[in-house]
Image (cartoon, rainbow, N blue to C red; front, side, top):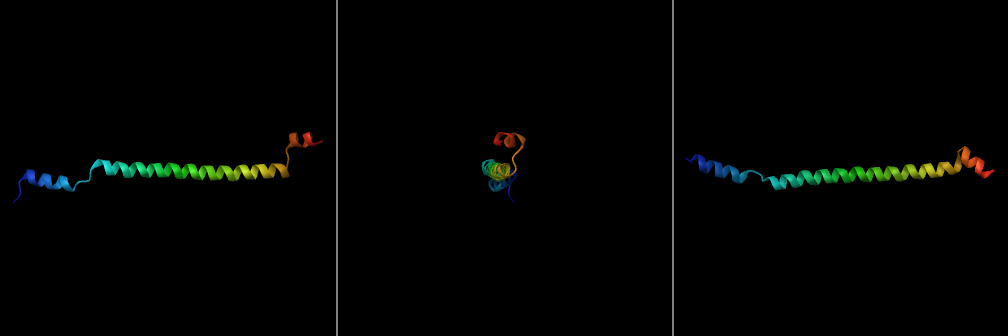
Length: 68
């Protein structure tokens, strides 16, 4: 039968170290932030394009007065 010290040593060998766990969590959050930024940039480009195109088709009052 193993002593308590030997059992503790064997168990500690099988425990995951903190560095790989932090790396996984850190990369997960980095990926999530980049995903949100990418989606936000894509939505911003689409909304900006639609706003620019529709403003040429349907000018506001200031643009209509400037054309006269």
